[in-house]
Amino acid sequence: MVKHIKCVRCRYVRPDHNASERGWTAYECGNTDSEYFMSLLNITEAGNKSTRIIWTGCPYGAPLKRGEA
Image 1 (cartoon, rainbow, N blue to C red):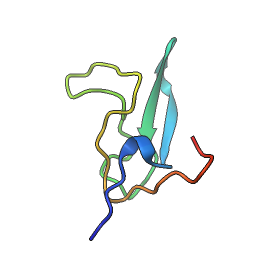
Image 2: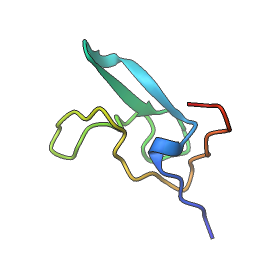
Image 3: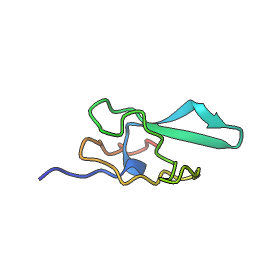
């Protein structure tokens, strides 16, 4: 069985400085194996910005190590 890692708990999430705006940080998937690669993870389907990472995740994620955040 493949373990499903939520994006909010994945080590491949990284800030996207090019998409970020003043007062809002965009986060993208940095895992080249994921179908979410380079997708903004704190944007809703309607295109609204969120301060939290809201995407559900994928089977290619890797959990954060203790102390990472």
